[in-house]
Length: 192
Ligand code: ADP
Image (cartoon, rainbow, N blue to C red):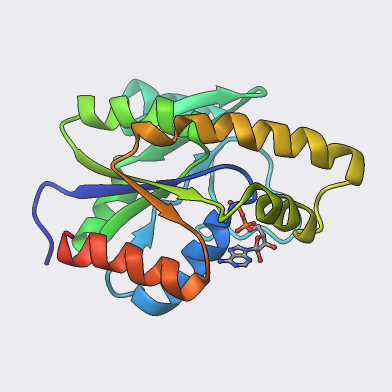
């Protein structure tokens, strides 16, 4: 079992650096040791999304009553929809004896970290970096979700996001997945 006051991990980094990919590989290898905190939201479920896997979907009134009864660790209103995380979700993971992990963009991190610390949690933050800007461009375009005219804008945004890197406890260059996982596991599980 891990400590009673959960030590919360936060993984961030610019768009396209590989946060989702690293999480999937990390989970495949260390599913017994860490678990992603699933966000609770009032936004409508999209096709293919699964309750409890992609999000927990709540009606707005229900989300509001969770806020009122202080059940949300933190939350934000984004484009008219609430997104947040619940104590219930954190307890679920801690009771399994696993590390809770947030995966957020750098903007989310700025909001999240002080809120968690204010709640008395210890956080360990990780910033994923691309091996090079050219590789970041390739990953952003390779993801296939970007139209080419959006690519330059995405890349410019990602470069701005990278300016946040020095505010993190650990910076990890996402070279090969294997190396990234090894470095992450070393820091998280052996405290190096
Ligand atoms: P993010 O969640 O940070 O926006 P993704 O996980 O969606 O990024 O990854 C963006 C693209 O980069 C994907 O096409 C993914 O396959 C690729 N990618 C991620 N990590 C690596 C890596 N270590 N080596 C090569 N390609 C990677």
